[in-house]
Amino acid sequence: MEISHCYRRAFRAMGRAKRLLAVCHRRPDGDALGSTAAVLLWCRRQGIAAKAFCLDPIPPSFGFLPESERFTSDPAVFGEGWDTVVVLDCGDLQRIGHPGVAGGFPSVGPHQPPTVIAVDHHCTNDGRYADVSVIDPQASSTAELVLGMFRENGVTVDCDLATCLLAGVAGDTDMLTNPAACRSAFRMASELLSEGADWRSAIGLFVRNRSIPSLRLVGRAMARLKVDPQTGVASTAVFRSDCPDGSDFLADGLVDAIGGAMDAEVILVLKERADGTVSGSFRTVGEADTASVAQRLGGGGHRKASGFTVTGRIVEREHGWTVEREVAPQDH
Image 1: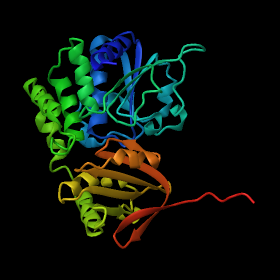
Image 2: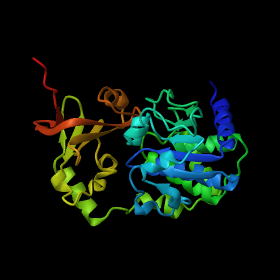
Image 3: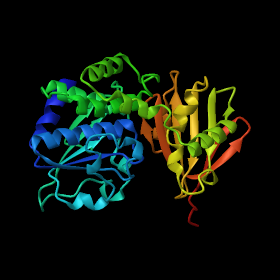
């Protein structure tokens, strides 16, 4: 199906909404938050009652985004009778992080399930959970697809909308420096800047934005780096003891920080979580398909940037770090 047709279908479905809930993935990044904020802003201008759900609170550094005050982390919001749900930047419903919606969203009434719209650029997203899908793995970001939908349907992109969407494309392309920074991403950034996007906030967010504890964590992760000479994979580990106050959000963006400082085919950052799981983040500047590896581990993402979460523990090897996964005991 042509993407322009998908844009029109999704936009019509959003326009019919009376109460719309926008949802993005947990541990949000610039693309998830910028795209979601743009949808909220459009809803407010159309007179559509709308809120956004993100399981993890918005980092204070994203407070410049218009509509940021309409995000909630309270799962009770799903019971407020939304007739339309827009899921942004989520390869599947598991990425939302709330088990109550992993199988779908609550009905408005006994026989009125909400219309679910998926807007995403992850290659592992098949759109099966949605009634209407706008999915394009070739897009630099979900923000690019939201902009495409607005442009296709004649929405005026003013400075506030442009700021939201610039935060999205800057976040997923690491300020137009990583492999996702395709020609369309540069063109999009140029258009948004010409519309008056607050580039000092949207782009400056990703420069000089690390606290002293975060910089110390980068140093510890760098000190643990190992490179496998056969595979070219550079890996490191972050342990719970590195974040003694539970602030494991400090590790967010660590894989990009390392990728910007060294030349490696594939970079893997493993992080211990408080719930006993280990999350992994892949990045590559080469031709390796990291999404297929992440998908085999229950995760997903893009060919050049992906992630996964498994139950197990981090183990150090001679040429790298790996996860020793837990094996369920067999019945005898």
